[in-house]
Length: 330
Ligand code: SF4
Image (cartoon, rainbow, N blue to C red; front, side):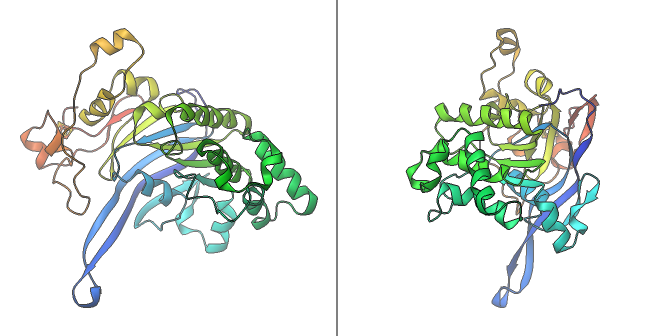
């Protein structure tokens, strides 16, 4: 992890990213009748060696944002700059070469590993696809990768069902590391695991980050999970960024009512901060991105709602160095 104040070089620069999924209707469903605005104007940057925690309830667009950055979805609009190169404008071949630099760790270590491949073959596959090793060297590199993620290389001949959930996620991490990426989108990598195992995987990701100088976008629905690994936190609500701040600031001085509500569910170890903290308990679900509320999309659930909140969409504004919030209260 870099220090929150470090002036590192920006690795990933996301500018006004939009991902709209068309909803079709009419005869034979050929006519577009609406858009689901899964991501609606998201802007943030991630510095080299940094972890940005991207947090929000299910359906807020955080997974779609991660996939748009990796160009697994073609964004509707906006820019994704990787070391200054706009990924959206790259040709297929150039993007394939670039893809080696950026990897994805999936939420579901059960579903993301091919059940018919051994752990060794799963880790070898990206090395073969990208022509990074063959023959004996391939086996040696796969063994080394398994060792790096805390698995014994003698397990290379076992199939995914012979591993525990935590071990399977370690195989997923080894597969992502195989091509020596600079940037990894960790998409809820511990959500499907027992709480006792979650800390082990988060610690592993932290150690690998230092060892290989990795940059992470760490997606989670819960602020407790991202606290230890993130340098900065971005909170997303219904396709937009509600607040971005350094980790300490986000936990100790949250401004957006939605961030405060998410934090209400997370105990803070410092008793002084805990005593001062405002409690907001959220009611209701996230509204549908097919028909988002006008103005501030959080207004139907916000305890501080004012008349203009339902009419004017608040812009994301920097209110102190490194701390931005999209709310009419600021
Ligand atoms: Fe609440 Fe209004 Fe701020 Fe939205 S803009 S979070 S509704 S106070």
